[in-house]
Length: 215
Image (cartoon, rainbow, N blue to C red; front, side):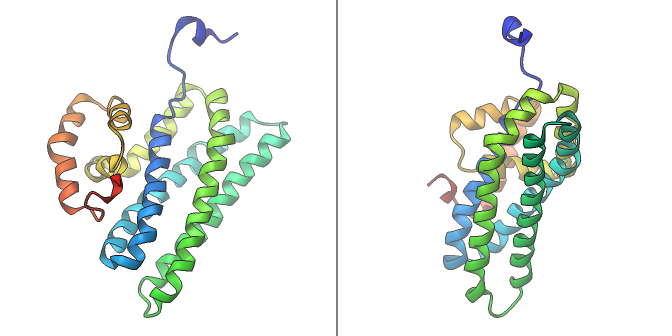
């Protein structure tokens, strides 16, 4: 019997931020695809942010989610196979990202970049879809609040206090008011104020997308 359903208490795993990050990755893929042809400077700036937060997110999963989940799934071969696929997809995506990094300084980048970005987009989109369909429900059902918090804390520490000033505006760029409210409800009130008054206006002045994220 699910005692949480009886008491109305919050579940131990809150996936709000996870889905927000996934949405931001999908947004960047869409905008990077256009920028690589129309605005190389915006592409480079946006790629640095995209790559930074993708790396932070996946390292935190690799360190703090998948090992814990593997222990809990002992003997469940199908679920363990899915977990192995998560790790393999990370490795495949890392290789695709590294290829883009490698060509950005080359003279023939305009010729090869579209194919490499298409590979990044395919790898990441398939991975996010797979994770949302199969891995996230297992996280909700298997992890305790303390185990989930380890993952949350690792991501937060990697972003850092200084990095939060860019991370939150990036995360919420182009988000609906409802999505923005859901995320900001999960941060301390002083940070919500700083986000609205300082971080978001500063980000928007220098954003590579200049309002395109909401289109």
